[in-house]
Image 1 (cartoon, rainbow over the protein chains, first blue to last red):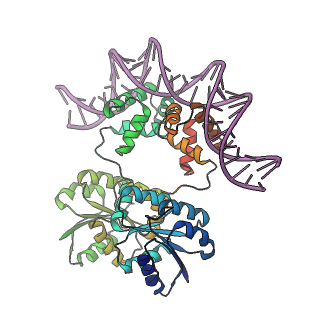
Image 2: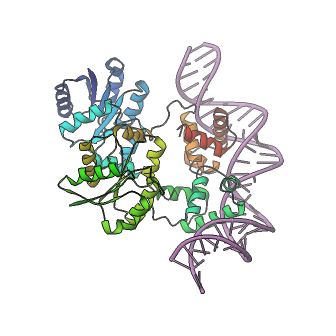
Image 3: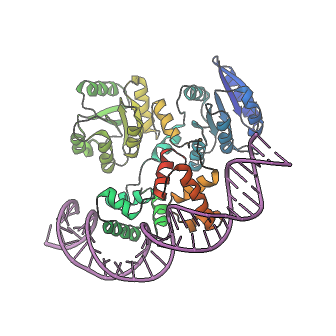
Length: 205
Length: 205
DNA sequence: AATAATATCCCCCAATTTGGGGGATTTTAA
DNA sequence: TTAAAATCCCCCAAATTGGGGGATATTATT
């Protein structure tokens, strides 16, 4: 029997989810909580396989809650269920240890599928969320930088010095300087940190 | 009618996919190619909505091919279909512009669903692939670094100098130096670049 | 209550790095 | 055949970095 917990402050939503999930044969709701604080106190006894987690919660929110719960139960699968499709929140949730992120308007059958998927080592996500995640890997192809400049800036962003970059690219240190001068001009910046910041923000590197 | 292209060097697999996809009402296979070179020459006429892409191809492989095709048709949805679950390849494919990544043993019905999902702005992935992607956002909680040290190293990795880090954390420059000394000791390194490299590799930052 | 870990700040010093200025030449692409 | 990109060169001053030696106050943790 797979053990599920629900952390959601809205009583109606929480008990609705609980009833729905309990109606599935292989699932058993072993705890429902309105706050992370309460959940954290009781979770060691519940030992759930999956936790459904709201983000907007009184006290500790769902992001911070996920971080703490993952410390207590590193193996647990946390699925964040929220109305927010804000990209910041998505990445914060994933960084905090959530394995899935689905929006609250998801039909019930997909919710059940998502729990099964999480338990089977998957990462259930609403399709637009998944796309956001995938796109976060892709670079901006409208970069003003040449490929060599991009390469240099990437190494610079890894903390390498001009000397080391020169060695790794088999070019002279003065060439590296030259590239960096051009990078600074193109990005309209005057230091390493500014260049890296601007390039990261625009996904040039 | 949604337009699909297939790039796959194995004739049997390629024509099998084509027949399968063509049998779906809303899909039309507008091109099947054994190499990226051939595809790139013809794609501007095909204007496909979705491309199914193999990775192992003679000549230009599927990763490099995705990069080039995305330059020609930035809006196209590329789904990589491969036997490889190697994490390196997955991230390379996503960086190259693929929106999905599914393994070749996927049942036909899920393949069709994946194409629909890609077209509707989703990111179809096999469940273990999706989990790999999600886990790439999560930090290693077995870090030897304190939270303050992690914070300092994160800023260092963004190219910030001791002075700037001190300002941003509202502490003295000497305190930053002190933290960095401890970071170097704990990571057994002797420079910024080494520290960042080791921390990134171990996902401490 | 005692110990250890963490976070904070201080000084000295030498080598390296960085950024800005001025070039030049060759290779590659449009 | 132009323009852009990539390569290399010199000069110089300010800033950064890394290593050495500390100290003190605040938090855990036992």
